Length: 223
Length: 231
Image 1 (cartoon, helix red, strand yellow):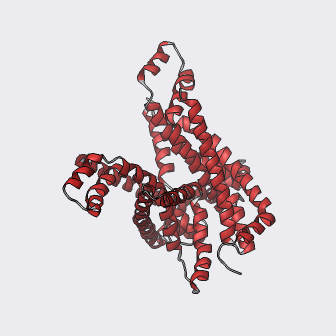
Image 2 (cartoon, rainbow over the protein chains, first blue to last red; image 1 turned 180 degrees about the vertical axis):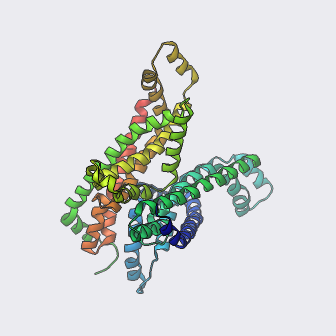
Image 3 (cartoon, rainbow over the protein chains, first blue to last red; image 1 turned 90 degrees about the vertical axis):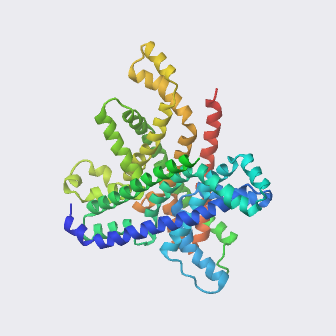
């Protein structure tokens, strides 16, 4: 083990951790929003909307994330430049955010759709009787109840995405993986540096798992 | 010429470089297929080890599963391909023949990674088998292996069929990562072609369609298998 080298690279690892966690959390936020919208589209009474949402999520669940990443990072700027007439730069972080959110939303939309459908009719009828508006029913009744049903399933998708963040280092994002690669190359000791990266990811995923367990227990208590 | 998606460009890429994409698809199939076979075999060991009465065996399996499910596949892939290569002892041993080959490292990493996930799914299936069936097998004097092979595994696989089929699709998608250790699979070929043609969008759409078709084919066959498995 090259401890001196690892200590020298610890600032790079630390900023890498911040980048990795930041990317994962912002992809979760955007992915959840996309997942809810896709789920609502799938449950919509307008068939073109339904079809579009189904095709979208089905397609992105079937192709590798790294391929989507390449399209977003290398092809999207060209397409955008052609459409808008000005060059729009897509940073590795934004490319990662888009890629991971699309993947998360595609998988989550199925979980969320099922969670919406599992809400009992009685609760919605009660809300209607109380004179809730459509928006109030959605925001105050449907969304919290859906959330309770969906959290265990969403937790699995989140765990997958957390590890998928390492992928974005391929296009140059300065995350944990990139720090390990740089340090390993500089000291000709990739094994030690990659092992440190592995341990960092392990701590992050185990910590996240513990938080998820508490959240699930909390939601069960509420129910 | 417009830079937005063009069908003519896609078709010309297909006629000029289609054979490379098919070659890549073949490599993807090879890595995925071998990875799946080894992962399936190893996952059985992992599942039984995690349910073992011996605490040391249980713990070893637990550490294995925690590591391979808790870290990114990319890290595992790099550890095996770049990490192990730095040890002289290793480079001078007979193992180097295998480990200097990216294809070998790719299959090894995919199998080790997927076995951890499949092992957990299988363990869940084993736990869901009704107690009576296991006891009946014991009464008939089945040996441990016979009981596992004839009673437990077929049941566990049937119970866990849905999640197992998801894992297989995941493995196909994960296999695209082997392009990062110089394996020229479908993803690797697509990358090279996109650099040659300056048409990343059309190239990746073509490659993406191929991945999608294979994934669909797999999930259809699993659905077909499910119907055959149900009583």
